[in-house]
Image (cartoon, rainbow, N blue to C red; front, side):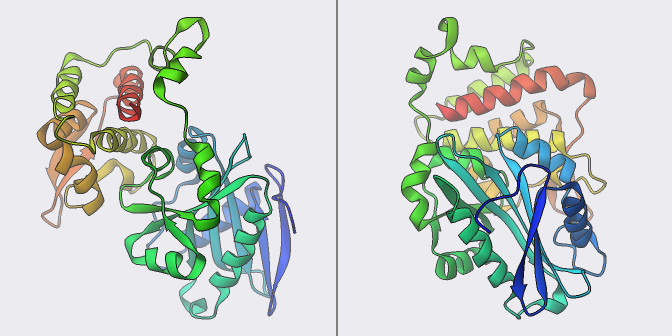
Length: 322
């Protein structure tokens, strides 16, 4: 086992003790892993996993999804891992975004064995940097047991940390490689653009967001000198809007923003305040109170707004990249 299976294919290897790992990106493996996570016998930690939405989300960032599932002697899945991957061009990416064990197979070392083999596999790929998206409760596990450290690059975070409540960790032996993911300064990228076009001109859609959006964005940009975290705020706004647009799941988890979410508050509202709220409302979010009495923003944009929403997301991301 020294290479990832080709796109759409899978392979297998033994984990010992009657356990087998299926890994790759075949349709049957994807269906099996997603079915395992959605099993009502499990907890509800992954009710929001939607492979269609996730493929779109990671695909826009140039990454593909990789799955690894541990089966027992009866062929039933007992543990699963998913990662987003990109071949080296020049720097590859192997980003673990979840690991899950069935409740009755925890504390048996199965997840640890799977992680070790998968990280070894990632290390064998040419010029590939290893990352993990971790919630707060799991961060110490990845930091202390597996040698990851907090990724300090704002640009890499903006690209790869697609959830508002996770930390992006990079493996300590990948820190130098990860620098290859940082793009050259914006002026240099614009100078290299074809026919003298700037990156903004080539990225933005033809449609223009309404004046209310432009006014709210202008208010937010005025905070720039007093808010060094404004670029992260703008990039997070772009991610929140795009995640909501992509979410066609039944529970609509990504179409709802909980105002009290610590990461959202730190990245967005503590920085952007009322202008950030106005921007989200311009993009189709409405302020409501849920059944628990918490303030939330729910996405319910009109489909006729899709063209200018493309432009709005592109502009937010562009401003965040400055």
